[in-house]
Length: 126
Image 1 (spheres, rainbow, N blue to C red):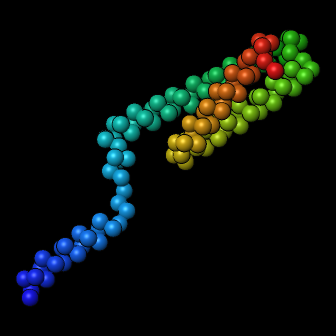
Image 2: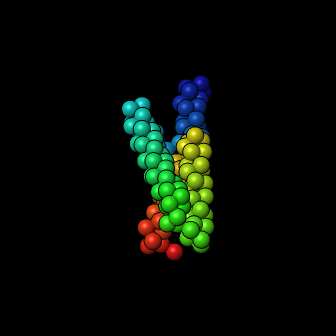
Image 3: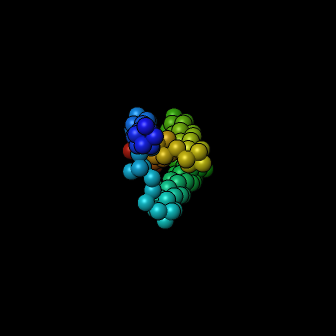
């Protein structure tokens, strides 16, 4: 009887484990270097978006100061500026929280707002 119980216990444990939802091994990074490379790329993407925002913001300020951007166009650019800035703040928060989906979405929103703003500064937008 003991002999059968000896083999039955591991078989029952194995059956119990197969019923569990174990984590997907494919989602585990291959190495710490892979994680570092991905993090470095994420940081570069954020840095590039922030530089683009600064360029847009500077161009808008120079245009307003020079009197080239005024009225409704200035208001529209200010609204776009707020949208771009907010998207960058969301991207920063998502990066710090490690939320890759929100991070990518926020960077995409920031890039779109910056492109809209630059087009409007050049006179090709709204």
